[in-house]
Image 1: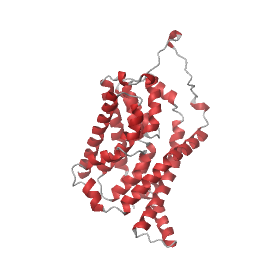
Image 2: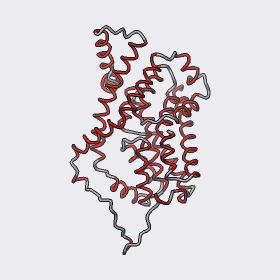
Image 3: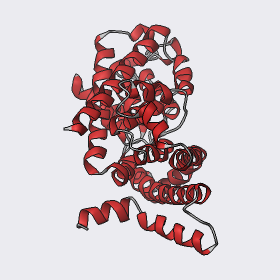
Image 4: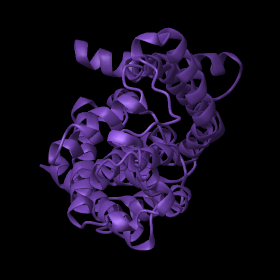
Length: 339
């Protein structure tokens, strides 16, 4: 085994935990070769692995993120124009470990601050879709190339989607309460109740641990649900059924996976156990990624919340752009993986 294979399997994938859990269950008299025993091993292993990675990664990411509070983010985005502003918006979205619903309040803050509409949508697409913590976990499942490619296409979708919305000139589709407030202050400088806390005044370690506890508490129920569904797929649903619905023999597999993901509400960490189980069942990578993207960006609860901020035309445009983008990315991945 090469050094990279060892890093991917034992450090990122933490296969040693799977072996340890299997040995412990066997010692306790559980037959891990049965469906129940195998499901229990999968559940304990995946929960343990993802929680460990979450704690470590969220701490590191939050520590870095402490340098970029919302006010500083607004300042950065406000000074950049054109497609580069969309790109920076998408990049900043990757630094925020939020689900789609949690990203919408920040989206509102950006629109009220008067940032270009396309930039705010680049952030809104990227924030739940691409996460640096999830990147590391994905490496342990799909490998380095696929994980990095997922991040690249996710950022690309955010940039393209935001740029299209910007060119359509749909600023009038934002609800009144989320638009920039009229400025009547002398010299054009409005006072705000929002106070900016300089990055150097933050206790970074305390902030990072607070974010770890907050994020873990928020995502843990979805993590348990995702691992439970993953265990069912992994040990109870026959491979031929999965292959008939989502396998490469079905030309509509990517479209079906995208539509199946929309009713689900979870962040990317909640989808990873399901993705892992589907991957073990032989489902193509592009189909799996389409499902993950759909869950994180097009979940019905998040769209309902977004509907309170934007009008019908803009909401439909956003859904159409993201839906087409996800399907194209899914089929493109499947095609490239066959080469």
